[in-house]
Image (cartoon, rainbow, N blue to C red; front, side, top):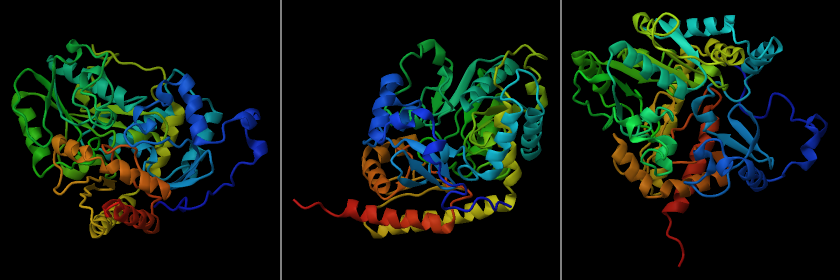
Length: 451
């Protein structure tokens, strides 16, 4: 069971001035100053576009430290964090088990370019928890995991065509950037400049929650089993099962992108929770405990096409990094089935209370949930596909809501197409703070402004 750390103040005292780097006195003192400094050396001032606050306005806060459900910016302000590194953090920031595991691993070396026990142990932990997944190979990001899984699917089937769903984001590899959600949608881009037509010539984009007609040219269908990059859109009943049948009928492979849902919706991810077993999986986020990691896996006969045993090449210098595997093993070792259920129960209560509180203040919202994942749409009806998500985002209300919540110390994802990630450190009391703040902001948004 998860008992450490308690949400609230840090378990370790804040750093003293003498503990800081020698140039700390020369460091900027405000979020704006840090952002200005970053823009001189980093394109847009950020290393991932949504962090720029481009769709919500204002200056991004620069995080200096974090603990449990909280983050602190460089100005010393504390925020209740529902971003949690976009789902990579499950136990809470700076959980003692994770930080100690990383420190212990680092003391023995940070990377070897050779096999290490940690990668085998993490692979075993994944395979033990995910029914039907016989083998996995570790990489360094979710994008790498997807890119590699699609190469395996094409190599194993001898086919080229890939089917994906509108609004589902599978990383920034060229082949799947068409029709992407998340940051691509936030920026209003249909795909990306720099992606040649040939790169997506064999990519077919179809509506989510609608089973496509497939043929013998399709190598695979890749899907987020819970779409979490167009807001949060759960699968309608029967969708994933029908998709499994459609793939089987033409000999195509079914690929579950569980970079977000894997080991967050439950101990075995969506395939275990929903009963539909794909041919290939993509994992990331939780299995690295907050460090860069990814993995792809599947049935043994499919993974045997990979070099050195087969003709499909894939490699990575930092794949199976000992720090990431140590952190991932610490998280999976602390996440019991009862903890997942308790979190899902808390989130279900939270979602209901959030919807009712905002509704009483005059704002109609949809608050979908999938296990511990939460979404928010400013819409009158439930959202089941990308067109509905775009329509809800187009009314611009999320930006005002985001700003009002941030003023009250609640950090939400800075874009309407991202899910929220309450984790094990978000107690009922912590989530009640979010509900109270949301009620206040909703009241302000619903009240007519004085002329």
